[in-house]
Amino acid sequence: MKFYSWNVNGIRAAIKKGFWDWFHGLDADLVCLQEVRALPEQVEIDLPGWEVHWNPAEKKGYSGTAIFSRVPLRDVTRGLGVKKYDTEGRVLTAELDDYFVVNVYTPNAQRDLARLDFRTRLWDAAFRRYLKRLEERKPVVFCGDLNVAHEEIDLARPKPNRGNAGFTDEERTAFGKLLGAGFVDTFRHLCKEEGHYTWWSNFGGARARNVGWRIDYFGISEALLPRLRDARIHPDVLGSDHCPVSLTLS
Image (cartoon, rainbow, N blue to C red; front, side):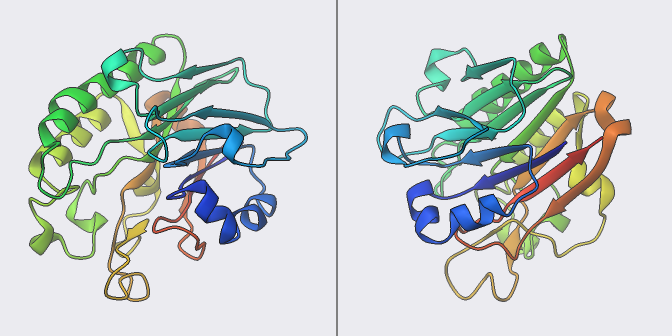
């Protein structure tokens, strides 16, 4: 089974930049998208043999997630099941025979950290509880834009960014708690090297100079670790300020 995840930073914009060429060139079984920023009726999709599921935000042109699957899904669930967290279309869960796949677009703490308390004290805790509830039934794969660089190795310039959104102690601690609850950061499990990032600022030629952050992940329940075959980052894929990440399970 091969999975891809990508924050497309607006699917309509990504389509104009070659999204469908990328998609049709994949050997994927399931593709998770974040920040689609569109309603299903605003995007023309012709994918015979694929299931397409959306969880748009109530606010038009904002946030939202989608899953494209050519594997039959047993069920699809939108949100965390908590109304105050579910208006922004940030979680979309697909149930497969052997495990759940949870597509998430984690709220940004914002540049002035105005949303840091909501993000770490409320959202991160609720998301962790949600994954553990699912795990009582079967193992979990989660993926998406988690909006946090966990360790210093996960961004090019850790010292000047310490305390900034995405690299606060609170966000890093919350992500550590998620891993500590029995989940594995698949890319870092397989690759200990620095210099691998998934998001770059649009300013200062950051992408060309590879001054980036690794904030997009595939995580798995520890029970799935024997089935882990590959986890990659695809920085050569353009069309968004993020690049896709992938996971292969046997």
